[in-house]
Every structure is written in C-alpha cells, then in structure tokens.
Image (cartoon, rainbow, N blue to C red):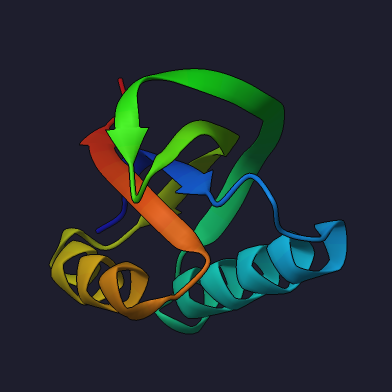
Length: 95
C-alpha cells in the first residue's frame, strides 16, 4: 500500500547546482528503489530561513511530492540525515 508524502529538503545555499542535482537524483533513486514514485518536483530556490542552521541564514529549498510505502519513511529519514548537502528535511503525509 502506498501513501502520499511531501518531502521538503533544505540544501546548503553555497552549493553548485550540479551538487544539488546529484543529491536530488540520489533521493529520488532511494524512493524509486523502495517501490515509490515522485509525482511532483518543485524547486523553490534560495530563501531566507527563520533561524540560522549551521551558521547559514539562507537555504536552497526543494519540495518533492511522492508516493511511497509508509514503512520506508524511517529509512528515508536515516539516509537524509547522512546526506551531507542536506541541512534540514521534513517528511509529512499529504492529503
């Protein structure tokens, strides 16, 4: 059974676009390997954050709307925690 999720990723703002693209490819590959699918990929670009993270005031935001098994969310969180370019992430259920 698949559930709908929204995954918001905040990347370090000073990264090259190729590095961000490679990290996004890695995340989408993890989701597809688990039997999920990316239904929408929205790049919000560089934005000011409410508070500093790793001494950075800005972040590069990306929203992924996905369908994936609920059991995979814990593994995805673990993988995102270890992915160096990602400063913060949030996985929420979508309606």
